[in-house]
Image (cartoon, rainbow, N blue to C red; front, side):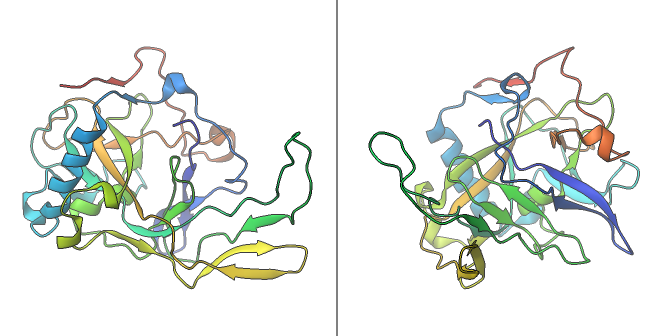
Length: 266
């Protein structure tokens, strides 16, 4: 998982801070593999966790986390451990509607030469004056737009996790999957859907805007603990904003020199 959608928090009048899409998010900027939490847990185990977590959505009072005011100055809401959390525990999903990646912009001949195609670009997710949340998917491509997602259900709190404050390391990682892989998914309401009918991508040669039909497999994102987390501790994540320290006074790059977060199977 090398590519990542860099999420930033920017002050919005009357709204505190919100995570916004950085310009150039489609440039394919990469995370350093040495800085990414490596999850070695078998995929089948993670999918079983997703199934259990999905059905927990009907009983949010049983969740291992709560949503409350962040302890990070100016960060708005945050996600906290409601009880001690074990390394590897499944915690919550990232909610929102899925926009598939843009179709291939051009075709390539067998010898690798460019043979044609129109320049295409995605239509940027909605970023109105209120808070917007966007997550770039690595395995399937496209992005999840959590604008309008609930802020009170701890089972779908992925969009509320804040960036690590100075001196802290991330304590959660993400697992991407397809909902069709999750057992019993048809019996429960999903935290994700399609942006069917909304603007998808633009053909700049003709100025045509295409809408998403929602035909791609629907993905999901589950957050899990990458270490033991104490009760009451705020969960944090590394946003990995390129050159963020120079552009955003609130942002401090995570210092991994002391320890590299590595998750191992229990």
